Image (cartoon, rainbow, N blue to C red; front, side):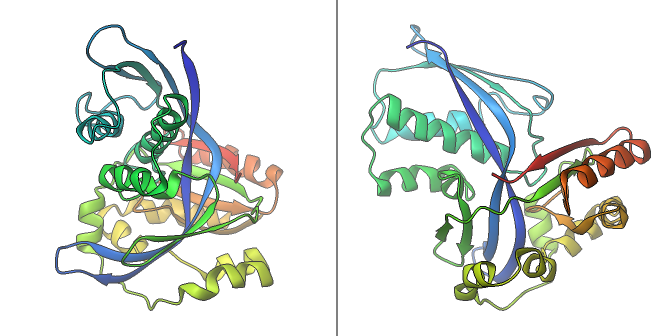
Length: 287
């Protein structure tokens, strides 16, 4: 098996509604999720030794546990359930996506590795088995198994896919804060009612930007309470020319802005770099 390159794309939560807190501490959420042209790079080849050699390189390699990560977890689960036998790998993950940002980098790594192994190693996992491994790896992993605009619906983790392309011009700003998802949810007080059936119908019938502008991320207030400077970033992005709206993605800390066109997004990036020179900032587009 020669070294194979896999692009592992990040997810963006365009909206997120917290519907209910369960007795076990988990939350029921509805979320409209898209993907953008920002990705980690996974290089994988077979290892003749009887162990996996997993390394992380790139801008955001710092802080990733070499033994407790989503790549290791996928391989461990596949072997535990006897789907993967007597095969070990050399894996280099170039981390271009910041972790603790709400961009789902780790979940994406797991999803793309799982899909690759199932296809190339001919594991013959059916949909049920793939979803089982994905769900055990992380809550966002099943969503990222398919690079389609998706709506996560409620308690049972139902995922509704759409073939509609959003074509959104996107600015992503990461303020060098690793948000604790657990703390953000524990601190959250905002709850919304659930009306999932109308989401994609509304997107297809109405103006997409008009619909998204009316949406929100219920976790944003909690994130701002825990990490106050994030509000300044959100407000500043929104003030820039051509910005339709700005909010956090996932449970933060990355802040996104949706812009009228690519030029506006690039100009906004330049403004961000002047005001916040130490923050990571990229212009991208939904795919």
